[in-house]
Image 1: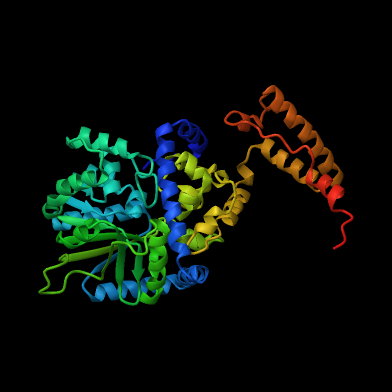
Image 2: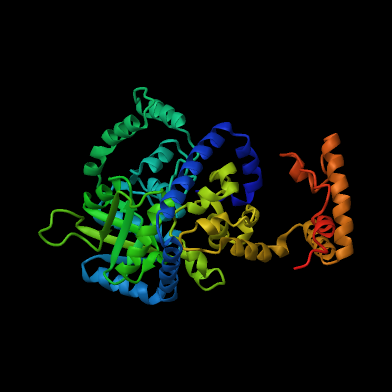
Length: 467
């Protein structure tokens, strides 16, 4: 998809005026975050489990080069093929060559953020290869000629009513107000597509180095059908997804579904280590794993390595007050929300996504929700620091003035009293703030400062209180 991250401010203003989007986000994020809190709260040792999961991811990153080589050796020993892609163009070229080698023209695909990242579908379409999304959310996105707005729930931006209208318009679905009937209609519509497909594609939630296995975690049978029915299976997975052992996976599989969808366990957990053995009817005849770098090595060698520990659960999106109000499309690329505000600048160049590190209130809800305790707020602050040289001079001057005033007790107190009087004046006469502070009053009321500062209250009530 086209990168429009630098248009975050403009796209957010439009999103804030979209009532249907607001309805969809209220339903989606509220339900998802509420279920996550509930099922995580059931765990007696939830905090310890989070730290264990964090440890698993950080140990894997520490040994990343060795683990990837171990993974490759184990898959190759079972007759699979491992290909390395330094960027999206090389990954797409690998896929095209596999299709040409086996004369593959029609494919089915389960959910994969990596293939979204490399713009795979448009590339294959240019070469006459048809690819059908089979994840329900991704299929809806494909049908509407749009792109996902959430890492786990691609159509977070759409209401049930909008989906129903789309199915009725595009597929002649009979009218229904029941989600289960819509799902059953699509299931019947897609069933033969798996049998007709020449090849199947998937991403990978995890890769297990000790056995050379790729694991996908889904709630729909499409993942198993896409990878097991066609004669060729191609998986595209980011290099950071590798784990040392199945014991590490056993920890993370307790965290991923709870954080992503509020489930104790996903409906389907499928692992594959290569083509079907001789005499085995289930599974593909050929298996290809494409290990995608696409900028991950640069992150690995930087102070932002921890960002690669993300298990793509989307919990930080559901908890984020910014995402809850503007949705995923405002972020302008594949990865939205707090983690996207880090990953997008790091993968696409900070100059191409400069507003995103500022698309946060730094409230810390994202870190609290993260199942592997990634310090997202600190990395957002670090990215803001990295952007200092491209910031508007007036903002740089303003921050220096802010720092000077807050470092001087007298200026701090005088400034607070002036701000308190001024804010009440603004409220009373409904006066917009001058530039650059009018960015606030363009979209919301300016709250007045308290009539009494905390310092004054302390002097009045507590200054002489003995400890």
